[in-house]
Amino acid sequence: MITLESFVVLKKLAVKNISIEPRKVKAEYCVEKFSGDTNSIELIYSYENAYFSKKQASDVNLASMMLAQVALNYGLFFETIEIDGLFDKTDQRFLVDMLENTSREILTNKLLIKNEFLKPPFDQLKPEKKSTYTQSKLQFTNSCFADMELSKENAKTDLSKYAILSSGGKDSLLTYGIIKEIGEPYPVFINEAGRHWFTAVNAHRHFKTIEPNTEKPWCNSDRVFNWMLKQLPFIKENFASIRSDIYPLRLWTVAVFLFGVLPVARKKGIGNILIGDEYDTTMTCNMHGITHYDGLYDQSKYFDNAMTRYYRSKGWLINQFSLLRSLSELLIMKVLIKRYPELQKHQVSCHSAHEVNGRMYPCGKCEKCRRIIGMVKSLDEDPTKCGYNEAQITHGLHALETHSVKQIGSDAAHLYYLMLEKNLIKRNEHTSKLAKEHAEITKLRFDKERSNLEDMPIYIRKPLFDILSHYADGAVQKVNHSWLEFKINDTFINTPNYKLDTR
Image (cartoon, rainbow, N blue to C red; front, top):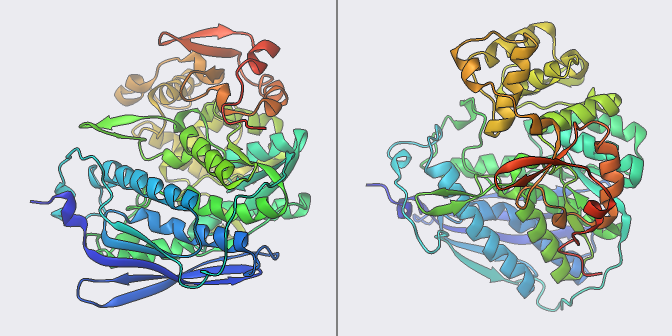
């Protein structure tokens, strides 16, 4: 019988041998098996400009935290995880908490669901509620920097500057477009050394010509993630050839990129870090008594707020949030395509993008592609403008007649309602069952959990909603499980204080 303890298949993961250069930081990830055999790979971040000094304790500390993030995905699978580097109590508490949170997320969203990457009998795990789920003993060492002292900083930042975690998708493109109008944007594209970078290539090339603040750090995290899968005996050996819309195991990924943004933000005095997350990425769920975030923790407002609290504890006056939490995916697409068409044409939202004559194009076959095609067509716009050909558009619409999309129920229902109303897809048992009008989807939505102004600094609210209100069909608030229309005014915008404001 498979139990959670059955997944402890390796003796030790050591993150060690940290190296710090002005433009590069790296560490060795060493896996030790119970047999005593070891395998290693380096995790590397490199930059176009100098951001680190190995003589500065604050730089060594940030490098140590950056290089530790990938390890937080493996708290269920090792007897011990040992992380070397310069850490204070705030760092250690953060790593302990996020390791536990990620262990619970991976359990509920990778090991307890149908996961085609798992070998039998590891795909037969049954849920069991526990007080904690991390199985690794987390140890901290400091073998190289014992002579350095860390103290809480009192960093000054500029609230008009915004670092934008950028990917070439619609969310980060829209975020950039808005900030370019009302602030000073610093788009940061993390090249993760794998095919996932393909989605960012078109946008990055465009930004390099129009935005002098564009940065492109390089990180080989994608290679490390894939290498780690080869060390885990319960993962199928042919995992790389399995076509899937999910990763086999990892769920702590946004933070790997986010910590790659921090050197830029810290050195340039940037006061805000923006991640493009919409309304449906904040949710709490329960699986047989085990609470979790549906595998979306690092896209939720809870993650943003946890990061902002961490920055505060370090003495870094940085706010992390999303501009888009009141918007559905469809409304994000609408604002981007209507207000910023020159940005939208560089959008690549695809699980399997490919290159043709130096430009990246979507595959037209994956779930994400058919979702984008459906949304763009339902907005009476042309998917060819962002790389789809007519055959892909036809295929995508046909696929929507038999396959659903990864959206929360009301969002998917309204999309199918629009597609049927506009005769974009055929009415059949599948489409008729899904389709239902939800007028709130094209409005700005506010509630106490997913879209609450308390989670957004006051200084950004009015200029943001002045722009968004031009494209939304009004605004609604959730009251007693119903959506009630209201007018966004100065009182609404300014009444709730930003819950994390300490200035």
